[in-house]
Length: 155
Length: 411
Image (cartoon, rainbow over all chains, first blue to last red; front, side, top):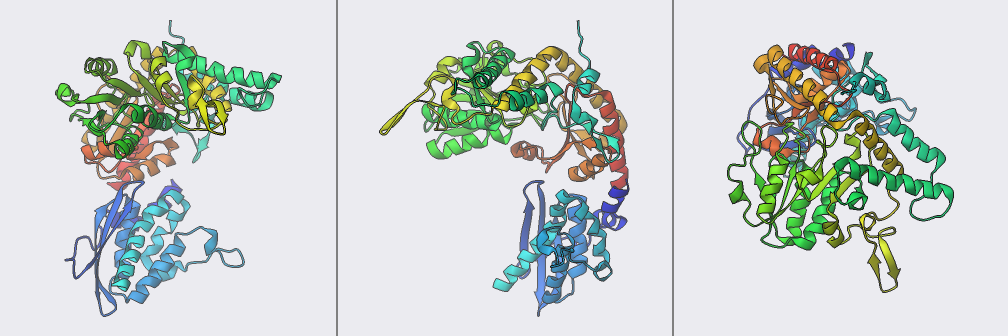
């Protein structure tokens, strides 16, 4: 069961049982973005309130497995109050954490190392990468957030 | 008279010797794909090792052996489903899905037009829904659905109204989500009384009970080899000879023609008209072996064995978990097969399946390619355990242990 405990860390189960930043924001002014995982039916809606280049508030609704729900809750805690630039950096770091593709290898062939101490509670999701079919669950909220920021950029 | 012994089937099935996460595999995903016995694997190897040649062409020894193997499989299948017209009514396709596409594209386009109705049910697999929607886009037919009751049965209370303008009824013999076994013979009589034909999806039923297309008095039957202990890559489309002979070709190319000139072509007769290109020869050898293996077990014995396993599982799941685990399907084994969909309160199906994997248990989380049915019961997904002839009560023990663990973990 060691593998399983590695995947379902206590922090993950905690965020699954008591998700942070759950709810909606009036849209507009908030940006509302939907994300779907058609294979497993998971759904997420991300609401973003951006004021003067800062993600002042973020709310989430939707349903899905513990990994997708915990990941979205952890994400909301990690990005709330940060500048858009900082949010994009966190997204990039998280994507690196979740990627095992060759494109993320350094020229030496070594994977890009993510400093787990620098990403706080998000490090709890590091175990997901050992369960490749669950990576898409962990990524759903992040891809949706990314899309929301793109809409903000083009607005 | 029963000489059926699931432990012997188990011993014949090499895939069941796999160790997963330190434990012997507990395979409860036969509804998705079943595990082939050694006889099937060896039949395919024999083709590759001893008689690899193309069929229906050359005169050399191995080529005629290959043709005999391929055509022999057609005869075995015809016997297995009791096709009244014999092997000439059995078309090899890629799988059940392709069989339904063949039906919709060939028979459907030639026989249905705007205003005609195809009657499906709410518990169909996407394979028996999407080809009809695609035909609707091309021809303007109407696609109608028999509703499903709250106790997971077809609601046939207003079937006569539903039958208005219906030219084809197309339903599953057994739901791949609910396990419900539908009254196919009764539906065939209803369809014929209204001047319609009936197609039956046998993907789930064919490996788990006796199939007799003549007795059922149906018109089309579709199934896949890999769900009946055979290989992937080959399926069957059966229809009566008089219907088959009138159906236009499906895919064009070599093998399906009588003649090709610079100004056109003419088609071959019989099943080969629908088998363009080099067919799945090794797979046909495997399918033939699977059919002979199942006939050796006796389909009535297989059905009885799986009914006992299902009844035991339903009782014990109820006793063990009460309302925490809800069975999405009929509560007892009356007209019900060994497919058990579960909704575990407070635990997402993917998490249940992930925990079960640590116990070496293979189950299927998801919508099972039956999204209209999932919507009908307001479920995003279920966890599905499904039995095969090699399943034992021991498999249910491990399933229950794993479920207990999953519930504790997420409680």
